[in-house]
Image (tube, rainbow, N blue to C red; front, side):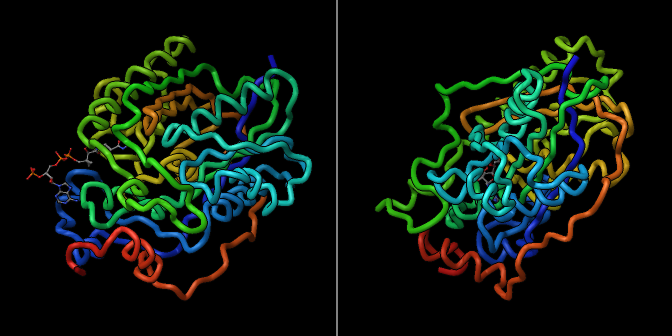
Length: 361
Ligand code: UT7
């Protein structure tokens, strides 16, 4: 049966780091609080737009798959902090790649966006129309981070990951999935206005930053990531013991641990890298997948569960059987342009717009 298989993978993390110790200089927080409550030690702050981060991750994924931009017939970009509303970030990624044979569109399912993209891309291939689909999760979340709000400004970061999905007749690819959303509670994690490129226009800065009822989101994330994964495993006819690796969305290490506990999955089978990057929304899963491959955590035929939860409030899970190849075919020399700007230089527009962080005021 025609399925779709991940044949290339890549990530692009911008070079500027914002550590917990840096945050201690800005707001009333501590490395101890952030580490124990979230697992995060540092995150990245990007000097380029989400489309450029995504394009570099995509070039690395294409090289890993042994493909060129011309081979791509569909680009799906999962993002909630794209460059502009129109054109879509997918259009800008296409331009960066010069992938002129591709259709392209954005998917905004916030932190669940990559799982939504994987399901959509697989369906587009399985239904016969497409051969090579690029799925990019990319975020420049710092644009909407309000450093006067310690509840949210310690959680998020920037980055991008990408995969190449190709048609296959092998016993590999998506076995089952479950996607959902509860729009009735969308307001408990929201950014009411503005895209992330150009001037902010709304007179009330608070309308332009992330606002979140953290505990409500936390409870729902733990429940839904576990429930959704169980549904996908049942649909696939796969027992929990057969799962080799859970690659969850990285929002909070306590959410990840609680999800694994609820499922009854050994912690050695869970991939965690939140300490390095914080919550990069739609980028967390493709970045984690790339690092899992780099670290030898995935073998030919491995059974992987992807699980995510995020703004919307969305959730999604997928049971995926890895194919034969775990090494990249080639490496791309694509790089971000260098920058002389410091992390604080990059955050200055946030301070100007949202207000100075408590300790700078
Ligand atoms: O990507 C998907 C969407 N996002 C998520 O899944 C995030 C879900 N939520 C969470 O991860 C957690 O709820 C948070 C990390 C946001 C917060 O952790 P928590 O354990 O739920 O803390 P809390 O909100 O109950 O706050 C506990 C205390 C409060 O102080 P009081 O009222 O007990 O005196 C907060 O004011 O911690 C305080 N607090 C902080 N203290 C130091 C909140 N933020 C900070 C901070 N540093 N950055």
